Amino acid sequence: MGLFTFGSSNTALGLDIGTSSVKAVQLKKAPTGPELIAYAIAPLPRTAVEEGNIKDPQTVVAVIKEMLKTSKIRPERNFASISGQNVIMRFTKLPVMTPDELDQTVRIEAEQYVPYAIEEVSITHAVLNEITEEEGGGKYSILLVVAQKELVNSYLEVLKGSGVQAEIVDVDTIAAINALENSIMETAGSQEGGEVVAIIDTGARTTNISVLKSGILMFTRNIPIAGNQVTQALMKMNQEFDQAEAIKIQEGEVAIGDTGGDEVAGLVKDTVEELASEIRRSFDYFKAQSREPLIHKIILSGGGANLKSFNTYLSNELGVDVSMGNPLQGVNVTVPETDILYNNLQQFTVAIGLALRGVVD
Image 1: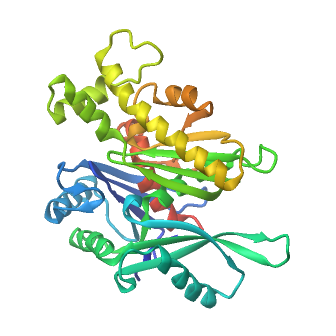
Image 2: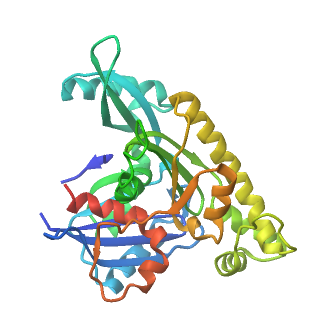
């Protein structure tokens, strides 16, 4: 599902402009399946992208251009995303109708969720599945996505300035799900009635929770607690942000049980406890709305997933099996140098999901 389609190659570039870095992944369509033929990651200054908004477009353009040049990536078919924290995503049910009728009805339905003038936003939708109602007649389960045109255009301008013409602008939430589809579906039918899987994607500024049943998205929510909040907690040790960030990466660990006097683990745990509480509230809300009694599995994604003992802590707190997502499941890696890729794999999830759009039917 893309917000916009603009404008043939057997390669596809996924470009993820995040808060702290830009990630690029280029995949190639091959008879044996998608091949990863190039990748790159480059840091961004802290003020370049804030709350999902590009504040310093010139700097972001310069970073992308240099990254693509250094990694020798030649953009052909390109797929990018905007942050899920800046879009409105709602689930609804509509009667089965023709595609043209659905387009018109979706626009009318979406107006009730839009706090802006309707001409200022772009509206798209995805049909998740078709439901047979007990009283007869079918309905579509629909995901509505609404984004301000100004936001989308700001990303398109940066991409254009970087020499990248975006074929589709997606939502990072959907791109992450796309990358983890194989991980989600490998046991999708293992529970009676279908397995319920939650993806917890933790970035620098936000954590996104997506809940799927039998591979179909049923719930999504953004929480403003993520990696930067952990870094800010570590600044209580009289550290500057960059120093605290380095401590988080090198020493950061979630304390399990008694902290044992470890100041770093204790400070990390304070933030992760708050995040776990919000995840639990989200799960409770989902269960109440969907009447699903259990979350069977949690898949972690995003750079924040690399925090030591994060998976163990969440599993203990939420009583759910937790595993790390593998966005490269089903992808053949053919680049000669892979250390940076695998050391930062969770951060590449969205970029991989975007690139898959161009090489998988």
